Length: 178
Ligand SMILES: [Zn+2]
Image (cartoon, rainbow, N blue to C red; front, top):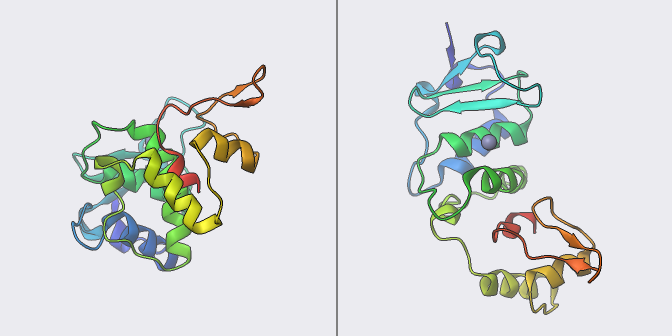
């Protein structure tokens, strides 16, 4: 019998904060923890050893290879479980990056109003560059220039060896890496 998330001993402190960040303060993107089932590691067969979690939106249920799950895996699966419009950005890529940001916010106790709004209204490159300028006091002309400067090549971008610079990312999912 699967247990409910609210009954899981490990669902406390950081995990509750992660839930709160994904759920948001205005929209309640997630079902209440008392309605989310957590399937036992042995209850689900996954196709690949690298799969650390899965979300079943219609049950709703979560499955994790390890209990307690890594906080980033937990955030990632909650993002999948949440109600959101995913027509504007690639859900998997976006969730991949956003999960780290969610955990970061939970750790520093910042609860945004509705972080999943980023799926529905992805920020423009200009907005991201303005945010970078505000935080770092440095002006960049493109997101690639920013990554060139930091020396970090995000997994979704490529490095053009000939031009010696980062090529345009497939999506403006860079925001969550900032
Ligand atoms: Zn995923």
